[in-house]
Amino acid sequence: METKQSGKRKIRLIFFCIEVVIILIMLGILYLVMSHTSEGPRMAELDPEVLEIHEDIQQLKEEGGTMRGYRNIALFGLDAETDNQLFKSSHSDSIMIASVNLDTGEIRLVSVYRDTYLNLGNDKYWKATQAYFTGGAEQAVKMLNMNLDMDITDFAAVGYKGLRDVIDGLGGIYIDVDEVELQHINNYQIGVSSVLKCEYIPVKETGYQLLDGLQATAYCRIRYGGGEDYKRTARQREVLKALEERAKETDLVTLTKVFNDCIGNIYTSLDSTDILELLADIGKYSIVEEGGFPKEDLRTAGNIGAKGSCVIPMDLESNVVWLHQFLFGDEGYTVTESVKSCGKQIEEDTSRYLKK
Image (cartoon, rainbow, N blue to C red; front, side, top):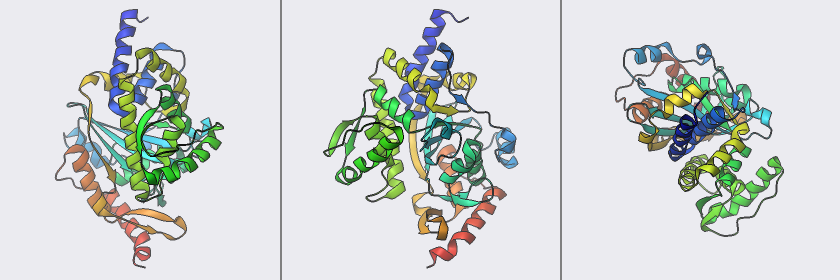
């Protein structure tokens, strides 16, 4: 049985964890509850054998090449309307890869745009958001590994309610709302409040202001008014930064309550051992860069027939080379045959629509 002193040390680890934005907020929630209560998150076990980690990637890591010394975790923000939809039948409005350098503590975040045209992990090509809807976290992780030459084996997912409750528990967050966002935020509040069966308070003015959980969740979902999904992912990262700042100002008792209140809205493959490994030297962690995939000058957009408006990687190979340089500093990365095959199919599927 843990001593009180040991328990306090673990709680202090969680407090510092809050300062590293959403991934470590999630990990803190999980670890705290698993350590100090009988409850826990909704756990998943992913089989590495079916996650489409290319053998070349595994060999490179073993030989000290790309991704050695990094922990890559997929983060999914879901439009889940019920608890069961954390598992499947939800679209991932937010898809992020958090890459943690275990030696330096540097964290790089990449948003994969939800409408990116990719192999969904089952040799069907459509918007990336459809992977979680079709096959849950396992298929969404397969999609990322197959198309991007990644070695992801872990994930954390949160729905509307989880995000709203975390923000409300922290007393809201401060966001600068512009005129275009003001035109749309309340319409999104109507939709989210209908899902969560709750009332909402309209945002009535522009400027830097305190948003509650529902307002901030609606803000994350705005995709109109210019920039579309590119701008929406930027808003999502803005909310994560605001969460970090708010959490730094919050006392430990309140943080503990927030964790316990929100744990049922988290679905993850991480267990307490995984979390302890990541938190062993939490003080050195910092987010140093963030970006979006596909890269701005290597993407286009178009209506791909019945599949609707999609973000198209103009050259998947070049995008993956850039991604590995961005995340891992690998200047001379050579993509696998899997990426080449996916890229060729993407070009075949989309070229006739883009030439119109």
